[in-house]
Image (cartoon, rainbow over all chains, first blue to last red; front, side, top):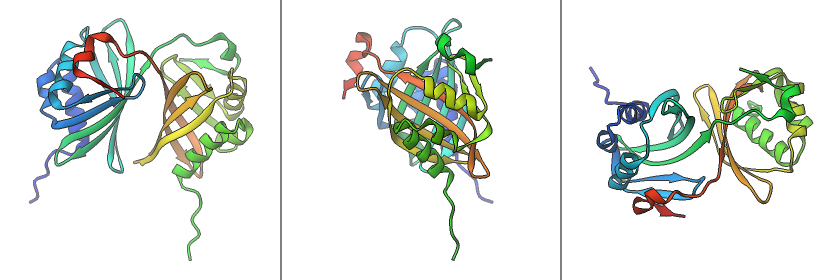
Length: 127
Length: 127
């Protein structure tokens, strides 16, 4: 019998579960000590586990995280997650690389909600 | 000898090439007539090829599209694309489903650029 360890998809699922629980130290346990997270929209780079934990711990507000999809893609795990503080909803689109059972690197985008513009209403439905 | 047709990744690459060229009719040729595109951030749904072409043709501005990554993921093709009109840069994160050699369905997110907030500067590098 082969005992399977957690897959890379499991790792990313656990990461979002720990963020959802506000367990930022536990989230840090899922990444390498030299983990690097890039946020291209603001050209910010978080280098190292302790900075990763600190940014998330200090992030204003209490955010719940609901993964909509987590997929295994070639050497990546990609997640699509709805994040809300009960008032604002944003979407996190994250591209993770795993190595030796921990997350090694990520590039993450954040999509705000916005009003549908009037100009395209003739060709668009609302849902 | 087996002649390979275009892969699903090729389809998505061609879609972005045609958007980049402003060839919206050509982009429409890569999707099924009943193609559906969802934009969760504004809860907009574009149903059908002709609406898809019309929204893109009427989109204000001339946008160039530079794919950063296009990956094959289980039943999806996921693309990460930098889109710019020369002044504003936005990122498109798109999750496509293909069927029978054409794109059938997509869910797409748009990430705006923004200023890095001061509160997290102690733990973050700029790049």
